[in-house]
Length: 453
Ligand code: MV4
Image (tube, helix red, strand yellow):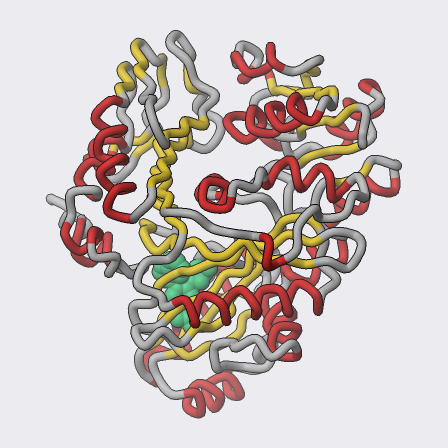
């Protein structure tokens, strides 16, 4: 096992990794930007090193500064958390060439999975169902139009280097195809410095179901079942749960098997997620791989009893996975609500400021993953996630009741948060039936308000 690890991240995930290190008896070095110098979790690390000014480019995204901190602190490994440098293949490669183990997949697996058409090609070769569409990035607008006709409208134009919905355009008919293609390419070039796009058949009102996988360096790959993350707004997840509601066990087993085949096909190691779209007839289609620990990993930890962050560290240190697929048992149901410092009544605009009061829920089946405390000032420089409220109970209905109870206990004053929105969601009958798809929140629950003129 490593003697000392550096955490190249901030906020709740930095704290999550610090906690895992402590339980493993591994020393942990935190890094922080000037904006985070008063963050309370820094005191829980064995050492904290300032890596620069508030802008991410000067700190959490700055590879030379992070490598310098790792050298100074003499660590053996670097945990990237999520976001920031976690899926940057160059960072993973640099870490390893500087003799720091990168706690994540091999850099070539990150690179290949980052190219969405490459990921689809690997998936198809591993007999994982993919959405019908172009084989790889498309050529001339003329060829693209011919292909779109062949696929059949509506089609979706997606950025090859993308993800998260950027550079994505739904195109319902031939007339709108050429302009949609141009604007998708422009957006992709601006966002990813890569204008390459590909085509897919548009799946109407899909659910977003993802499968957690873990792979060691000894050829063992397992899946830890599924999460439903359909409740999203503008590609920002709000609520996640495990297992996916309304999906028959047979389908969930086929999803898990598909994810394992894909991971094996790319030589994946460490923790990762395979994302799928599921249509109204429970057909599933692979869309992308997330080559990192995800925000919503706790719902899987609650239902499987497996500490994913500890397993990431153990696998990176060369240990074998301590369980086989048939030893992974899931129990009950888990939900996570993302608590953001945003105002849902004002288009989710960020609400930075000082937390003047905080009451954290407790009791059976409750978990609160958060780096904030009373008196803490949320810096305006980073994402607005301030905590994750996670519940676990024997059944989905009991887990919903537990979440309602926990949300009623949770009080955060001084800033606006998404708590009131979550209270409404957990009282919604469609959500209670598990019948929410990825378009539901904007279509039915809170349609965009018409702009007053
Ligand atoms: C799709 C789709 C429908 N059909 N692909 C959005 C972000 C990216 N990860 C994939 N996304 C989608 N791809 C086809 N062929 C609908 C979405 C989509 C979506 C997917 C997952 C979660 C939320 C979403 C919200 C809108 C659209």
